[in-house]
Image (cartoon, rainbow, N blue to C red):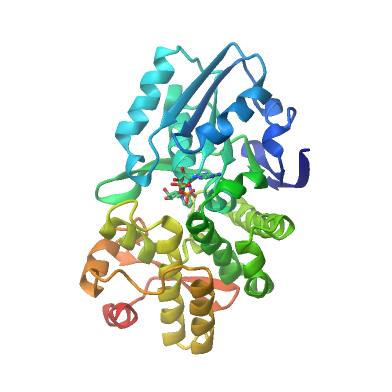
Length: 360
Ligand code: NAD
Ligand code: GLY
């Protein structure tokens, strides 16, 4: 039986939208259908998610005139302009017009690429996010960042384009592999670190229940994460200021992902290690106690997440990759650090010496 547990709202005026969180929401005939305006739908999923969840989504869409299913190959390495082009080929072949609605059914890769396709197709059509990984439920489906990768950098080609609704069915996490769950939990922990110390302490206490996929605890973690993300996005939709705090650990993490080749390290794993480096740097500046860094490392170990940079990378490779990050503005690297647990800040004065020290 579908059970709507929480409804949040991303306050962006006419671009605002609801985030629905609950159990069995994919089987709710009303929830999704009310956000599909016309009779044309494009469902984009991938070869892993579609066999499990696509039929449910189609069932609640009823008798639309035109439903195009696009099943992408699975993997970060397919988050490319080439894949985007195959989406446009198919949508044009099926003659979708501007009234169509794109639905992203899958993790962050499917969500990011579908959102970007929706932003571009006929200069913008409606789209809905149905995120099925924890990472996509707490992060990528909310806030309108859409993109594909370029061989030289992650998410380098994209647009800010908000969905019309985000539908989070907690049940979908039951089929998610443990490694993916942990990667998503890294982003959940991020919210505690950047803006909510009580939430961070709660996560330290409830980690074993989260790893065991206990429904009520997962629902609370998702709701608290999405609330923080929605608040930050509402303040700074296009990341001209405060939104950058959501990138704690990401500049280091993107260097790992790019340096290792897309897909070897999961995004959440790279971010988890990146946050460890950011915490080390914060401790080196005397802003947080070294014991906080140790506690965070223990949390990563409990989550089975990596606590060291890849063996074949060193300070020089990191510095080269980080200098190409989107967070470099006018030649200055902007990094997110934390003043204290639950209070992030953005710095642009990191020295090469400091970076080399934490990367040792
Ligand atoms: P993903 O989309 O690759 O999904 C992870 C794996 O889980 C895939 O193999 C997928 O097929 C599988 N999967 C998805 N749902 C499943 C389910 N319910 N059951 C079983 N398997 C399932 O990875 P992700 O971690 O969801 O997202 C990572 C991507 O998100 C990266 O490309 C990253 O850049 C992007 N991202 C974007 C934002 C944003 O704001 N737009 C934020 C964070 C991350
Ligand atoms: N994941 C970072 C952001 O949405 O801004």
